[in-house]
Image (tube, rainbow, N blue to C red; front, side):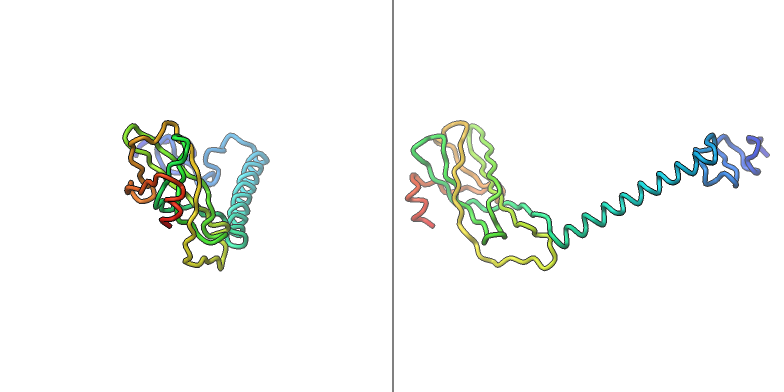
Length: 174
């Protein structure tokens, strides 16, 4: 039988813990009052985390968090300024597909445009949207003129987007 530390209750090895101190692992050098304080602080921490988790869950169900999602860009139009581009994309009815932002990634060969819409309070219990698509138009500023670069939709895996020469052509095509 191998030799262990004193008070290891028959178990050998440097990490053996006696049965009466099994719940005090790592706190053997603390006094009884200090151990009680550590346990109380641990319980307060666990209790606070549970309360925060429940509060977030109740907020999500009762009030609801916003849900942002990409929207399909179906066409763009040039303007009088070679740095401006008018984007037309499909959102939703008010509260179900409001404009959130438009992200533009430019390279030497193409411009990738990704439109995002937001559904307000979308995680709320009983939240629902109709299937009505609403055309939305927004202007973005390019770092360099469009010139001959191709415009692609980031929400549809880089699908090519129709480029109109004027805002009137864009609006007529809708």
